[in-house]
Every structure is written in structure tokens, then in C-alpha cells.
Amino acid sequence: MTRIKGMTVILIDRREAGTDPFGAPIKSEVEVNVPDVLVAPISTEDAAKILDLSGRHATYWLGIPKGDNHTWENQEVRFFGKRWRTIGIPIEGIPEMIPLKWNKKVMVERYE
Image (cartoon, rainbow, N blue to C red; front, top):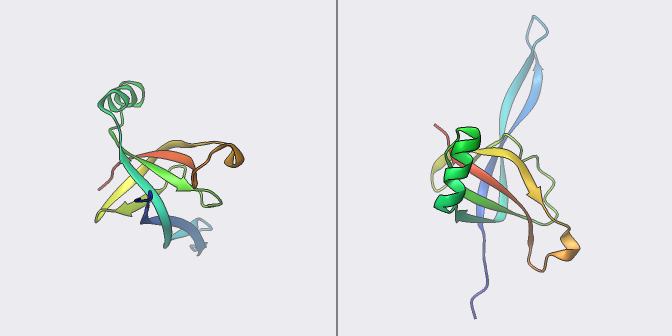
């Protein structure tokens, strides 16, 4: 029997790396490998609803593994050799009530 298996997704985390001479923060990008993330296409109905409500073209759902503490709201990710941006706040369930290894999901759109 085959088990459900996720893939490694690269989360591009922006962190403060100091300040410029005017006191404004300087941000640097740090790539974090997040293993075992499920990637599933969004249904055409969901994509149409998201486009109508937010004007954004949602393409995939990402299933985030339980215990992951990264920030997924308004972040960039890389998988399939392309850059994507998360849409909105991740939807999270109670880990003990969900039988599989994933308890959060977030939508992504293509980002260039």
C-alpha cells in the first residue's frame, strides 16, 4: 500500500539583517527547507471564488505538517522550480482531531 507523501518546499523567510544609515530596517531572504508538504491543485470552483473575492489567482493548496512553526502568511515559497506567494491566513485544525500528518493548509498563487 502506498502512503501519502509530501515534498520539500523552500520557504523564503524575510528577516531583519540590520538597519540602514537612516534607521530603516534592512531585510534579507533566508531559504528554509520545509519537508513533507502536500501540494494539491485548487478546484476550478475554489479558484473562481478566490478570484472574485480577492482578485488573486489561487493555483495550489499547500498542506503544512503538524508541528511546523514557520510563518506562512504572506510569504514566498518555491517548488516545481517556480516562485509562489501564499494567499491569506493559513487554515489550521486541531492536531489531535486530524488523523493524518498535516493540520494546516494555505493557498498559493504564481509569483514572478
